[in-house]
Length: 106
Image (cartoon, rainbow, N blue to C red; front, top):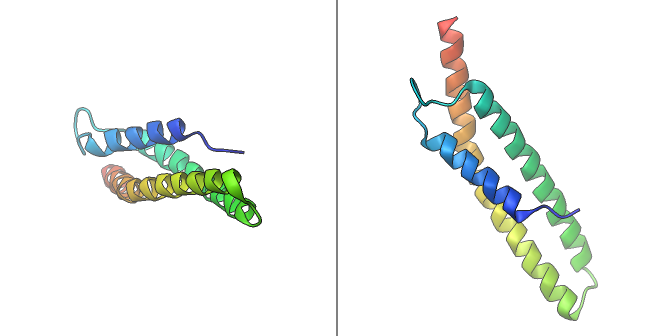
């Protein structure tokens, strides 16, 4: 199964929008929105890791055009995975902060 690069780009854009939103008050994302997106992000990262492993296995013994195509796809997957991981770190922090603020209000 191959991940859809457009889905990963859309998810990355969604994460960036959440990170750019105000951290409190009007316009701030809900804890639910942060956690849902974080969960989706982790699931996508796992799917990308699985795809990377499948491509690496297929590379063994590949030749010619197939080798070039697999190598290019591997590069794309690795870049998508690195970008997604880079975005998930601050999103996780933002969700943690929102969670602790919610608990302190209770």
